[in-house]
Image 1 (cartoon, helix red, strand yellow):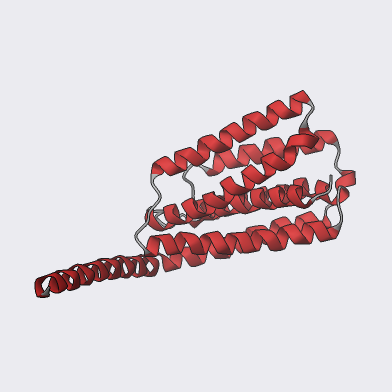
Image 2 (image 1 turned 90 degrees about the vertical axis):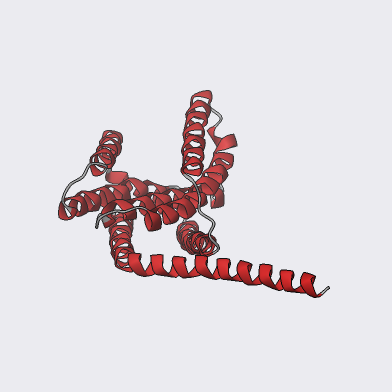
Length: 234
């Protein structure tokens, strides 16, 4: 009995020590990345502010179909360019231009719904981001790290979602399936917040806070669109 009790105390002590070590390592990691995180979220707020301002002050009725196509084309070009290494100030300018175009493109949804749906989607995306960002930190605090395989799973899931979305458009069944696709997209991009957070904290960005904040930006915009579709009556 005595030896059994001593063994249980030894195991419990080591489990606690192991958990404590993981938590201490996590705190040290946060401390090392705090300046990067401050820059990431500062830039993220600025870019979302640009998008929101442009979104609210753009008259979508004055944008022709050709102009919308060019906006989309230019946005994809900017995303491709932002992948490559360049000075932070250049990336910031390009990112700001992308955010402005994104606001112009999103302005079309103002013609399709009322402001309450938009406000609901905005408040929803803030809550979702805070929840899954906290979840990512909690997992890391307990020593749970998502692997690159999980990132590939999310990528291919998103790719399949896009492919089936295009097929549904060509088949003329958008009104039936769009909410289903929006819900799946919502799940994928919510999980991307968890994955991106862990990647940001583990990867060496060497001061490139623009790329890290771009990942969050795209997650937030896509979750906003998914919530908008899910809450819309159309």
